[in-house]
Length: 150
Image (cartoon, rainbow, N blue to C red; front, side, top):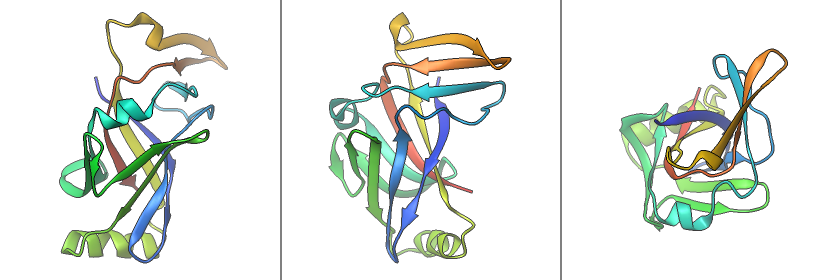
């Protein structure tokens, strides 16, 4: 199962950057539950072993950049804060459209899509907090995309 989650977005004229995953920060209500990604839940090795796209709104026909097993025009690095990303917007109609949305302030967040190893019961833990399901993520198996979202 692929899971989506929002985070931070920054930009300059042609470069988009930010943190697609922020460690130790509880999410907003994601539809009946909140979650937290713990530090160490994803490693540089996991990123380098994944084929990751940068997209708009998780649309596979809106590819803006790609890191295929650690190589490509999408830079992804793990640091103490989380997973940082950076890429240049393509010189295409879609790139220009995204650039315009960012400049106008309509596009200002990032989301990500990941999966867990269903056979690894220690990769997540569920409990109840504040009358909501609360999920803690300890190990992400694969990252599929980071997405600029409205």
